[in-house]
Length: 260
Image (cartoon, rainbow, N blue to C red):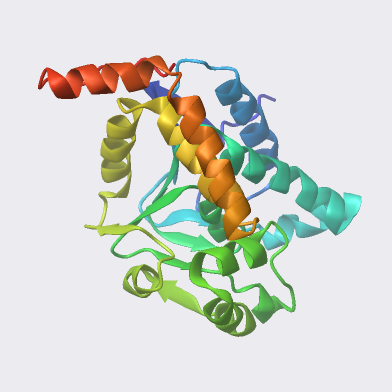
C-alpha cells in the first residue's frame, strides 16, 4: 500500500513551502520523520530556492510534538538514535544558507517547538501556543530545545519554561522574543510567504553570511566573532550582488540580485 504524503513540498517564486500534513495534530511520527528527511534532501539539491517556509496543515496545529502512541517504536533505536535523526534535520535548517521561516498556525509543542526554534524566524497566528511541556511527562527536550531556547530567550527564562513546562500564548512568546511577529488568525502562512518572497529577492549571499555570523558568532568571544565578521565583509566585497546593489542605489532603481 502506498505511503500517505504526510509532508508536502511546494515551490513558488523561488520559495519552498514544507507543510507537515499529519492530522489531527501533525505529530512527529515515523512517517513524518522519514518523509521530512527526503524532502530536506530535495531542498538541499535545489539551487533555485532562495527561502524556505515551514508550516503545519490545517487551522489548529503547527506540530504538536511526538505521537506518544508511536513513541515505543521510535525509541527502538534508543533515545540517542531517534533524536539524532531529528537533530540532523533541524541542524540542516539552522545551517542552511537560506532564510528559514516557521509559520506557526496553531500549537507548536515539544518537538514542534524545537522545529520552530531551528528556524531563523517565527511568525505566529494570534491563537498559536508554543512551549516545551516535556517535563510534565517526566521527560526533557532532546532535539536541541534546551540549547536553542536558552540562546534565544536567555538562561533564566529558558529555565523557567523548561522547569514548569508552561505553554505560552502568542503574545507571551512575542514579549520574550521567542517569536518575531503575531498575525491575525489564519494568516501565518500568508505573512510568512510574503516575507519569504521579499527575502528571496534580496541579496542572497549577504543574507546567508549574516545568518552564519549570528549563528556561529554567539559561540565565540566578542573579539573573535568580530574578526570573523570582518572576514565575511571582505568576502562580500567580491560579490556581484554588492556591485549591483551599489549601481541600483546610485541609479535610483530596484536592485536585481543574482545571489552571487
